[in-house]
Amino acid sequence: MAFSTATRSIASVHGLKTRATVTAKASRASVVVSASAADRPVWYPGKAPAAHLDGSLPGDYGFDPLSLSADPEMRKWMVQAELQHARWAMLGVAGIAIPEAIGRPNWLEAGTYTYWAPASTLFFIQMAMMNWAEVRRWQDMKNPGSVNEDPLFGYNKGDTNTDVGYPKGLFDKMNYAKDEKTLAELKLKEIKNGRLAMVAFLGVCAQTVLLPGVGPVEALKQHISNPGVVNVFSQ
Image (spheres, rainbow, N blue to C red):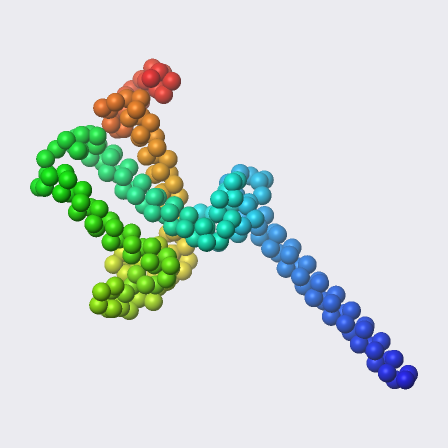
């Protein structure tokens, strides 16, 4: 009986030590995680990031005041939506500014010109091509990596990449994303430039309303030549 009691006492003490060790490790891990969260860049200094945004996404600064991406499935969709809108905005702003800067017609006049096919034909061709690309992109979101396979003949190009939104292969012929660190840096640069382009496109639209028929480059020249008179408040 005495031996059994002593055994139970030793086991109890050992159990307390084990629980204390586990608690201490958990506390240290919590401190490390908290410190890491405090050190990450946030959208507003001193503002705690949204709980569901842990900083693992490119350009994640914890900004989601309305908790629109709190649901994990919705977050996946919104990440891809932002990425695609960012890429289109970068192409759009460049397509607006560069032609005007080199003396080509204003982007607003593009629809008035005659091309190799009627506007209706071009519209349907574009819709067909965009439909194919968007359906493939949507399928890749549902089944990551499926974009690497031919949907008709089953040909697989041998790329095992399942990073949705970053197909590599033909889209990285220069092998810029040669390692994970470089890829992470490029993802961050892309989303930053894309967000800036989206804001820029919004500015172009607003400027077009205020100055009908005047392109953004010409509007910028007018503002620089006389900023006190030509500005957003004078229109």
